Length: 138
Image 1 (tube, rainbow, N blue to C red):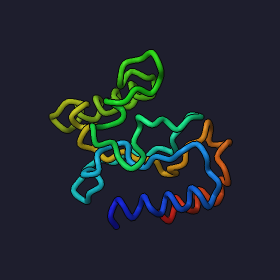
Image 2: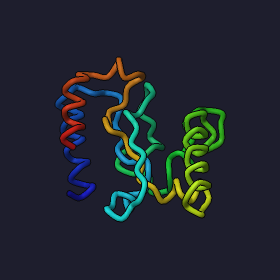
Image 3: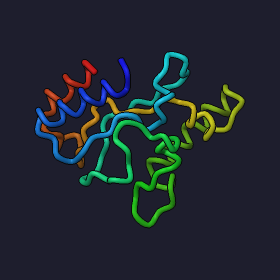
Image 4: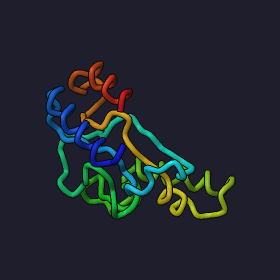
């Protein structure tokens, strides 16, 4: 299935399930959604309480969101605590086995949200059971 089709499904479920804080799918460029991509990082769902217009929904074509986006006001791109933790994880993976830098490895890896709907916490997710069922089918 093409990314555009997946995003159409996400958009329909977003409306049908009553989500209101936006959604995001890939936090990596579209080309990483490929059978040839060696590493995937799938996290639970996008956090926060606002839908940031500077964060694309479908994919992060500028590069890994863990490197290129500002996630916390006042911090440089890639400097939020969670971004730094993921960068460190990929630095350790790269050092252990890949012969490239952690940022290069992160930039070539697929990263996405399992449940694409934003919520301040997983407990605050609208219709959690239905949202999880949708994500499992996606």
